[in-house]
Image (cartoon, rainbow, N blue to C red; front, side, top):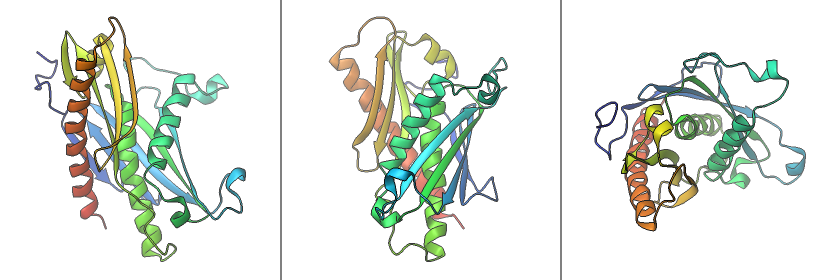
Length: 240
């Protein structure tokens, strides 16, 4: 029995609220179970030095957890004087994942920065950040197109992410924190709308996992991604 009594192949209840931040070019608040992440996309008319003069744009991401997004308070990175290694790894994953959605020549020589701030953490914060971050990115690009800044749509395809893992010997989709902390195998799967994978992060916490178990986890993740793509399409179709 799962902690929230879901079926093994069932996503947590998931919603995406548009425009929670009125000043951002695009923003979304994604809720997956108890996990909540605020995603904001900001457009800047500049690119990193390595992109200057190329005519090609850039997409990057930053990730942070609010001090009381977990059961105990954590220090802000500014107080530590350095960026936490886990935070760096996650924000690089988010950036890589969202860059896979963009035609940089069509974007032109400008950058879109996606800020992902975890309000409540109950597992799957990086995957929720990618799924919600794509919606914020799409809204920002729609705003550029409405303003006729862009001649063509730089979005190549939707991108989403979901976790899967083996808990108590059972493959399960979209792990909450209690499951994630007890998982024998944990995997984060980033995919594109056409069924291909962008990045897979999988590790055995205890016993090595078999090829059959891997295939089972990928099957669960693929089914979960289809549901997330449908949700993204639904909320973006009603965007104003």
